[in-house]
Length: 168
Image (cartoon, rainbow, N blue to C red; front, side, top):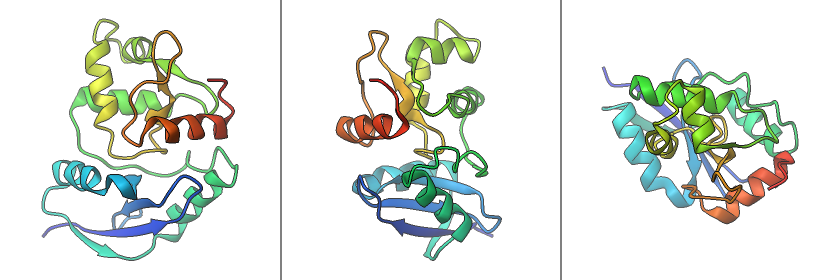
């Protein structure tokens, strides 16, 4: 039987977000509405055969709303369930370990997963993250401190980092 996943839409200060949860309440995807096609493509890869239905997951929705309202720890307790390779999973776990208000370079991210020479691979794994904000890929910046690629756009990345108090 295919997974039935719930798709919720939430208004935020930086645009509508799409929140996908499963029957157990685990977050399967989170992305901005203007990148819905990307989210659906990643979701198909990580949850093949899943069926999306409209609805709400109040605990996950409440955590996302609380985060945008300034409770920067609100997302920490959410369970995330994704597919991905062992390397991607390690990178995503390392992303979750970056505290709000801090950033890491791609090199630091690669080193954190025990593969200091795999900077490009860490960057690719970062870009394939299907769960924005909760797995905070926006906290990764260039080695020189510059804002670099973000699937949600650099202006949004700048806002997210400022919201968390990162001095970038």
